[in-house]
Amino acid sequence: MKSNYLMYRKFFRNMMIDVLSIVSKPRPGVHILNGHFLSLDNSASPELFHNLLYDLKNAGVGFINFTDAVNRITELNIPTDKCLVAFTWDDGFEECFTKIKPVLDEWNLKAAFFINPNFIDGSNVYKENFKKNVVLTNKNPMTWDMIKQLAAEGHTIGAHTLDHLSLNSTDVDFLKHQIAGSKIRIEEQLNVEVAHFAFPYGQLKYISLTGVDVACSTFSYVYSQDNYRRYFSFNGRVINRRHFECDWPLKHVIYFLKSKSL
Ligand SMILES: [Zn+2]
Image (cartoon, rainbow, N blue to C red):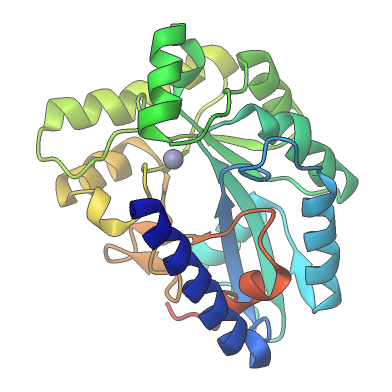
């Protein structure tokens, strides 16, 4: 019953975006798109993402490296004549390395990957629970070797808490453990400073003001995946990203590349 409801809801949502997107064009500005994987379908080919990039380019979108996008946004260096897009992925699934990175290489693009150390280092029981009950996706995590290679090749590795828990809490010890703990664990592995943090689930309701305080005092840059018509949330302290996935239809991605305000 529930899955039927979800199926219909998805169908009507897609239909609505189809209708609304007929007149959509990518708008000038800087957009950070955040995904999780190539596709829920584990047999999908990287060609999907390549084709999306190709179609976006033909629609007038320009691609920039993640750090360039962050610099432009924080310096308020927002173009008025170009639509610039950068990419990030959350949760650190293996196909970020095996399927998405090869496409990024082909396009000479550097992205960011926000990872959960306990998903990488956890026991099989931990990992199975994480996939089934936390991220609801049957995909394995990248290994530290894969993550080290991404970092060595110029991609940004960011933190996403230790266990991918909601940060809508006022328990400072819990927040510090999850937020600062993930920074320490990644830095131990990479030997470079981790300056970027995306809080799990991305919607603003999944982080408390105390959580924002802890995150912003631990990291130079903190990201949501919400409120995408504005560059910032929480009074300029959190940079907003927009959700997408590599297998979305072109017009659905373009529909979300709207004008933004500061
Ligand atoms: Zn996540």
